[in-house]
Length: 231
Image (tube, rainbow, N blue to C red; front, top):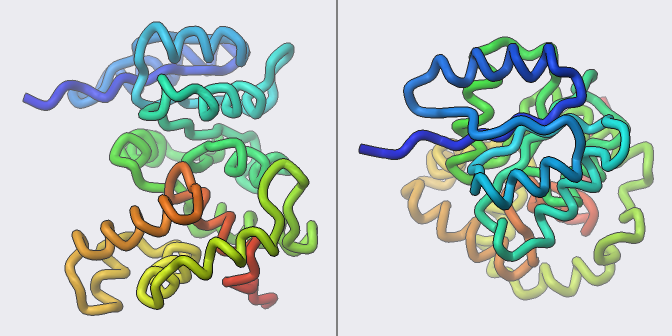
């Protein structure tokens, strides 16, 4: 029997945490293993509970969700932990920074219960959680920033050098990942198996130094491989 997905809830509002706990614990394939009211406590609990997925609020007093996500991503012992950012608005000023910090995706707090549960399962499975609306907001943010790095990560030129190490098929898959397609959708587009697509994605992640699929999307835009289309 597959063990349940261990979920850590992080939000400074106790009422929201309680609502999320009731929802998550109602599912047979997941369980809440801890609650935190700030980022520092979240990092401690991520280590002690060995959570699989952290639902992380961005704006909190003290250590915020962005700083906490950076700490979790930088800890080799927490490499299997996936962070899903919860935002008041799906298009949030910190979304791009969150993905750069290592978050696997983000979800608006106004999402339907089934969307939240699906987000946990998607993140636990190693996939990126980037809804169409969120991806559109992410691209808009890149446009507003000129598509450049904020100085915390590699420059566009450095990314371009890394891209040179990709095979033609890996670059092709990367473009489709940046377009928000799942492995199954990419497999159908390229007429290959989902396992083959997963292999290409994993190799691209290794060559580009990406923690997960969400960071591949960031790299695709920051490197200039994919250009946002303005409608």
